Structures are given as C-alpha cells and as structure tokens.
Image (cartoon, rainbow, N blue to C red; front, side, top):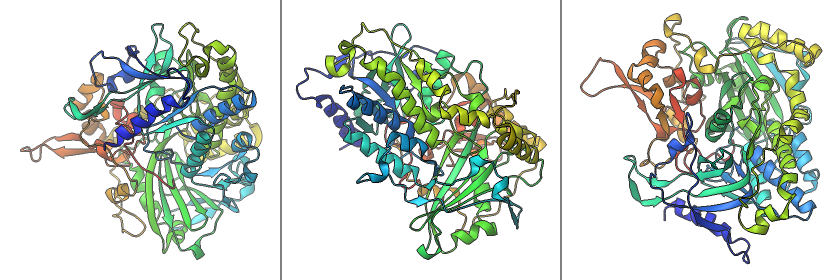
Length: 622
C-alpha cells in the first residue's frame, strides 16, 4: 500500500472524469527536456526510452499555492461565465494542498475580494476570522524598546482592514473551492522535468519517478513518472522554484533585470492560554539582535501576531545578502524570543509548529520577463513580494488572476483546439506566448505598489539608519517618482565575506521554554522523506571542485551549517581521521524545502531538486 500508488491511481482516475470521452489518458513516446545548463532533467533517474503515460489539459498549473489556485479558479470562473468547458489541472508536491505553505501572515484581502466578491456571504467563507485591531512597530535594544509612532510609518505598513490568518488554511480552502469547480487538483506529485517540443517550446511537465533507491536502481515499488501536457503551463512553485529557475535560464528571462535577492523566514506557532490572547494584535520589530548600531547592514526583522482563539504566530526574517558567515538565522530567532517585549506574549504557552521558507526581497527591479512560449511565471516564482509591506500573498493571488484572464482568450478562441472538445492536444496548434500577461501585470496595482518601494531594500545596504531614512522618503514623499535606480548586481551567495574578517558569534543555549534546539523544533515541522531514494540536494558537477577543495569551510567557516534552518548540512570528522579536515555531510532527510541552500551556499554549489512527491514538511497552521 505504497502511498504513491494510491495517488497515482487517483491521477489516472482523473482521466475518466468525462465518462463518454474516448481517451484522455494515453501512452506516448516521451517528450524529453532539452539539455541546458542546470537542466531539471538531471532529476530523472530512469534512462530507458520507454514511453510514459500522459494526460493532456488546456492549462496546467504547477504548484497549489495562492497564485496557482487563484489562476485555476479564475480561469474556471471565466469558462463558466462564458459557457465554455476547459480542462485545468493543478499539481502540488506536498502530501496535501497547503502542506508546504508557510507565511507570516497578515493578509491584505484586496485580491481575494476580487476573486470572490461575495466571500463574506458564502456558506463556507474563507478562514479570515481575526481582523487586525492593534498595530505596533518597535525598535529593540538588547533589553529595551522604543515604539515608532504609527504616523511616522509608511502607509504600506499600516494594517487597517487586514486579517491575521494561517495562509496554510486559506490555501486549503482555495483548494476545496477549486475541486468544487471540477478543477483537477493532485497533491503528492513532484514536477521533476519541464517538457519541451522539438522547437524548444514548453509543453508541460513530467512527474518524478518513484521507487528508485539510493543506489539509482529500481526497487519493487518503482513507478515511472507521468507526463502532464498542456497548451499553457503556469509555474507557481513559490520562491526559487526548481522548474521556474530552469525556465528563466533557458529563455533568458532574467536578462536586463537585477539578481533576485532573498530572505530566510523562520516561524513558530504557539498556543497560549485563551485569556492571554489578544486577537488582532500585530507587532513588528527591527534592531536587536540583528542590528546593534545605526549603521549595521544586515537586513531583517521580526513579526508577532495574535490569532483567534489562542494562537501566536511569531517569526524572524533575515536578508540572505548578509555578510557575516557566522550569523545563524535560526539561533538569532531563538535568542530574540527572550527579549521582554517578546517573551511576555509567550508565557504559559507551548510551541506547536515550526517551519522555514525563503522569500523574494528583490522587488520591482528583480522581476523577470514573465512569459515564454507555452506558459508563464506567476506568484513568487516571479517574485512579487513587497518587502516594505512585508506581504506577498495578495500580489501572488492577483498575478494568478491576471495570468488566467490573459490566457483565457487564447484557450477558447478555437473549439477545435480545446482539450475538453478534442480529448488531447492538437499538435497542429502553434504554441503561443501570451505576452498580454506581461502587459496586464505591468498595468496592474501589483506593479504600481512595487514600483513605489522599488529602491527601499537596496538602501539598507548603506546601513540601518540610511535604509530607514530612504524608506521614509520613498514612501511618504517620492512614492516611486524618483528618477534613479539603486543598483544590485551581486547575488546573495557572493555577498558572504571571508570568516577571517569576523569574530564567531556565541549564541546562548536554548532553555527549552522559550527557545529550543534545532532538532527539537524540526520535529514540529512534520518533515518526512522516503529514506531510500537518491538525495534531492546535489552538488553541481561543475562545482565539485569547490567541495573537493573544502572552499566553504576553509574560507567561510562552513556557513551552510548555520544558515540552514533544518540541520541538513554539517561537517563531520572522517572515520579514522580524528583532528583532521572535516568532511561535508548532507542530511537530505531533514530538508524543509526552504530553498535557502540553493541561494546562500558559497559559489551556489548545491542544486536543489525535488524529492519523491509528498516528501518534506507537513504544515497545518502555518
């Protein structure tokens, strides 16, 4: 009763959704990914050229997050409004919809209101139960704090009309709505390959083979991956999605834009006595422990939200463009909780869930070209998070909706090409690049919002005080009208400076009450992987010399031991070589799919690939 067999049976059963159709599931010669630098095809372990089963759709969405589900739902809404029938599939690598979703989250409901204008009157409304009632922003010293008056804060930091939510639960609600609309939503399947036709156009994805052992040999549980083909494929994998990264490289979508910069967010959910909960209380901080002087250049801060009936959502975000290789984001988070302005909220409570995820912080200047032949990038795959507002869910939802509205006219303009009418893709139909999506996004409120704060993140490279001063100027006065661009041409991995320039940071030991050791917290993430499978965290062949030469340890003191929020990377003594050079050990089974290692690793020597479907964290209230 291997779980993948059950899920694959579900995937196959979807082929008979229309009982009268002659065929929706076919066995065809496999479309193979074209070779390219860093191609996702390296994740495919079956070398035989045997045909793979395939299913065809009008639209395939890779990733069941806010952007992906919004795109699928909006596309179906348009089809229903116009009495058309188009086939839509949403594929999710988590064990269930929402299992890999993590966010702060104070939701600005603007996009959700556009997607479901009557959501408040629904019999089963979205889980928006905690309206923000109080908004505080503190500057912390090690033992004290100063509240920044709200009138001095940028309007984008004000949370009037917003909701404290679990994005995890909202995504589950969206997934249920999608299924009610007869959108095929399949969780537990990893998209391991991008499929291209002979002309290099995107034609869908292939799911990963399962039942391959660590030795690369087929086990008794082996099942070949399936091809999901589509007339348009929308990639909604979230920040640093593996297929999305390949697409950007293959089609040169990042040419002419700044490198994306990221932050790592670590989060805990606490249950506290209900009488201590102040539903709707929102608090953000900067300063200690990340910034101890006005000129500190480390970007980041914290959040603390009270959610009804008795939960506190707390988290810490560190910009991955930090310089000090001794900095440990997880342990910064743990010591932050001991500050009096934080610990008082947690007294008498219990930590019930832990997780981590990277987020895009490059903003307007780092958004790639959004379209390519056969599909588009949506949500955080493209990078629409507003780092000043500390929000990205509303922009992700909107981008999915805009993508749906842009591709819909193409999908229905010729009935002979609609998969629901023909049961499979008409190979005579030219593969389209829907450039209207790019134009429509540039004309949307998403780009307007991001343009206003486009230089704010880069200003913090000058230091904390200059960054705050520039953010105030940009948000209160300039509002995006400045004619200049603050540049960034260096990826986060290259921002790390040699360890010789810094002093190791001594972190306090966790007390087991407010702070916890990493492995104790990791258990709260529900992370699980099939152990007997090839590791999904791989050393890039062209970077093997970096590992063989021990460059990370010798130059940077092995920062991967510290920036990974799941204890995946450690340096251990080789057997029989006590006191000698330590060897890198990769504990891939610990991975929470945060993607930090693919970003911050010295020389980016790690390639993050998907493990077998359903592996990874299993979040429920994140």
